Image 1 (cartoon, rainbow, N blue to C red):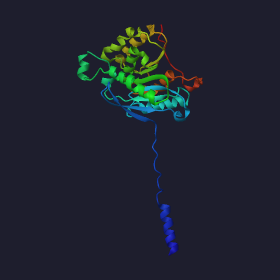
Image 2 (image 1 turned 90 degrees about the horizontal axis):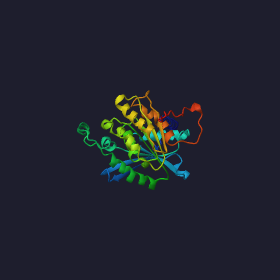
Image 3 (image 1 turned 30 degrees about the horizontal axis):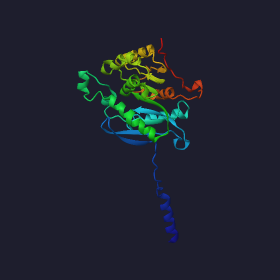
Image 4 (image 1 turned 60 degrees about the vertical axis):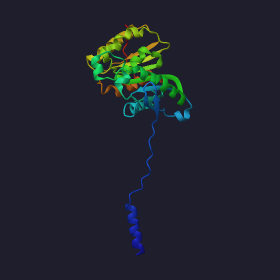
Length: 288
């Protein structure tokens, strides 16, 4: 009887499912919620810290990401940053993801176009969103993290429009800019048409601008053509421009494809890469 019970107990134990270990959360960053005065509402800012940040004691450049919500482009750009640093394609950076809520309101400038205002009645609040970044997000980042003082900004589509508007109207807000397929068609290309005059205004320090567009059709392309012509004719000193059009891509595919190159241009390393690595920049000259 004892032998039978022991045998039965052995069979039960052998057949029992193993006890699962308690899962451990994967942590890739942290979130701040700021009560914004310019925007009159609470806003989410997500932060990715590069590998080694906790122990290195070093300071790091900061990459500000427009449309940086967890359901937007934060995970994509944080991953691109980590991959670029792993291969020494681009520097380790702190990624600050600034979530947007009403993109037409936050990423477009004022318009008098009745048709646009009828369709998008909240449009035209880019100045307030820029004030939120300048007066609230940047001071929080400088206070909370070990930053080097060097900064860049990246975004696509309407975020690219906002980035170009910032570069043209307040160039010293960031050191470096990356605009991916920017929506320069907005408001009958108002920003592109004003770019000659805006570029005539000096900036106080050098900047890098990475500009690219997919195969977007004439509506998107003509604004880019106006802007690149203005950049080519500009006398604004200390500017480093990379125009890298990608007609082989679409609006849906370009961001993931070019973001590694954009970060490479904004935050280059001193590592000399093997030509076979595929890390060559494909910039077109804008100077005549």
